[in-house]
Length: 187
Ligand code: HEM
Ligand code: HEM
Image 1 (cartoon, helix red, strand yellow):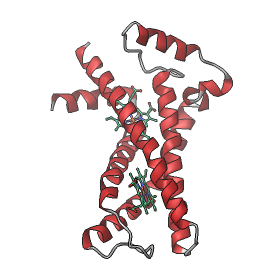
Image 2: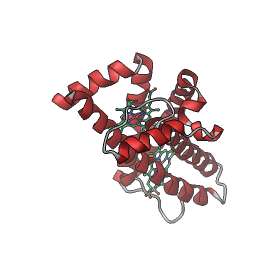
Image 3: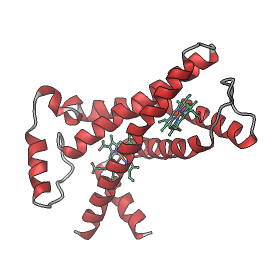
């Protein structure tokens, strides 16, 4: 309970109400997608399984995924508009100064503040990219499957492969976030 209160205060201090709402919506929907995907399944003929749990599991995964597409696009748009591209991708313009600074602090076992162009923002940028790839592959699979395209199975496999990126991101970014909340709570 104490952790939830500190987390709410931490996010309220750092994020505007709009970003906070979108971040929590994306976070909950992505975690639900990962959990529900365990109950999804297909028959050998490429159609959704007729087993009751797998049938509903697959449809819930598809419908939540489709609802997440506009919400995630809005989140990415708002993030890029409010912070700018360089905040998340400084290395694209060859600027590694803040990253080096953060890595130096980590080597001295100090937790760097989540500042612009630093390690936290760079990880967030990669996470937004991973989220878009997973959604785009899921959406492409859905359209190709509805049209009965012969290559839809290949797109499904690609989607399953790409989900690993989002899972790795949630673990990395989530742990970094929780560490910062703890650190802020102790100060
Ligand atoms: C951020 C959003 C999404 C996440 C995190 C996600 C996550 C996952 C995961 C973890 C799996 C299982 C991978 C495996 O078994 O190795 C999966 C499978 C799948 N996803 Fe998604 N997914 C997302 C969006 C979508 C969307 C938008 C669609 C389609 C509209 C979709 C359709 C599917 C299908 C058809 C499968 C295969 C299910 C099976 O064969 O058991 N996903 N997804
Ligand atoms: C796919 C899911 C997620 C995405 C795409 C995402 C993306 C982002 C982005 C772009 C920001 C920067 C927001 C801003 O300052 O404008 C952020 C901040 C943050 N996120 Fe996430 N996030 C996700 C999941 C999570 C999870 C699971 C946790 C914790 C368990 C978490 C904790 C945090 C925290 C604490 C911050 C604030 C960090 C700071 O002080 O700058 N996020 N996230």
